[in-house]
Image (tube, rainbow, N blue to C red):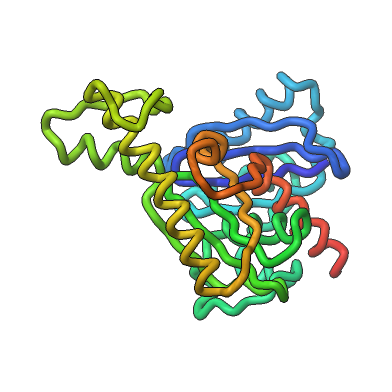
Length: 259
């Protein structure tokens, strides 16, 4: 078995792969002050809950955009699973077959790299991957399979929190899709502004990327807000909630085959 871990700024998603099957998945809050023992105990509790012996985990592959917790995850893996985890970075992604046209590959978030690798294997090229997380990121992979670059914008919840923080008369709201674009209440107006605003942003950025690249690249969406925003866009998107976890599995397999 292999444990795939995607450490994001807000949440950490964990997937357990049994051969080529994602058998279990869970999401926990990312805490920058967590200890390796806390992570280990949570892993043991989860494995007990799903009926899996932690000793069956032979490999751990991690994509992280939160460097302060990397050492704790590495120590947890060594102590509780007795294995050295594979942390994905640009060099590992290149070993896994992702060509680079990006000026500074080392600056690309590991989640964006594994998303691109998984999307290429599943959907072909050229393509645009949109990941709706703390940030909304757009990654363009050209027809040759090279990572060209992309766009980083504030995420759905991030935009809502910034609006509330800077506007004295606005309060936190539940982000659910309003029935109409024109809000009849302040809450509906805020919901509409945030959600339809992000949807319009996606349409505009995708259209500009396709125009710049001169192709009708397929668009793959992932992340916590993917399904919600995909229902509001004019852009046709393939929604794939497990894209990042599958990308981690693909990277682990290709790097292992390379050895």
